[in-house]
Image (cartoon, rainbow, N blue to C red; front, side, top):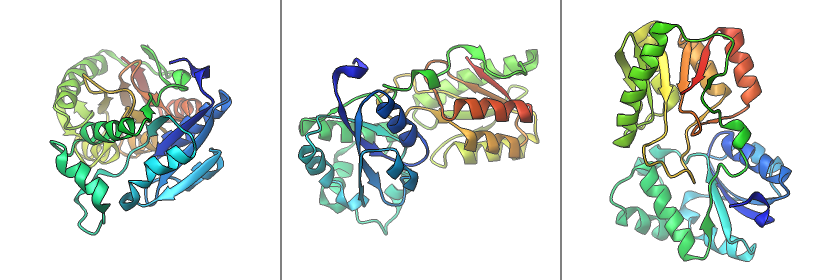
Length: 272
């Protein structure tokens, strides 16, 4: 899809900086953004990045379709995550529509849930487009992005970990592993990347490598691997000095700042 084929887009915004970056880049390309923000997940700063924002509780899921229809939106993107832990919190009132959607899907994997939401949007005449549409400059191609380069033993860990990470991602368990000397220290599951990094750093006691990948059949419209300054700070605090990302399939938020921070802390970033 060409960037200039439409002038208005809907955004279902989850947590983190990804929705902010998407909105900023969309506006640079002359596209107006109407955002649905999730109370308790979406960053308040999104207010300043979009043309219009509507805050909803998870229980108000059905209103998304009515809002987009009233705004004459027929294309929407999903950026940022809704905390998976919410799905297991009995205090949440999901509302009948979302409860029905969750009951009919085969599992509670992120891709399954996002795909079901995308199908629901499509049934209401709203096409879900790629959240990467405006972000090509933030997606590194194969290269070493930092001043420091991996030494031979780190390259061995990178490619050992890459194979493991792809298998784990293929099972939809997680997309990140931490390795050291060809031993797996930590595997990401529901807890998320930051906790996985902290656990791997604690076990490895420094000089470990983190590998983050996409799923083999990743739907690039949503749930795209993302790293940012928060990730880099976690790496530094955990004593981990090498990060490998999947080239062409990972977003680096605040790319210049991330690389500058990595160079300052002596952390390697390689896109492979």
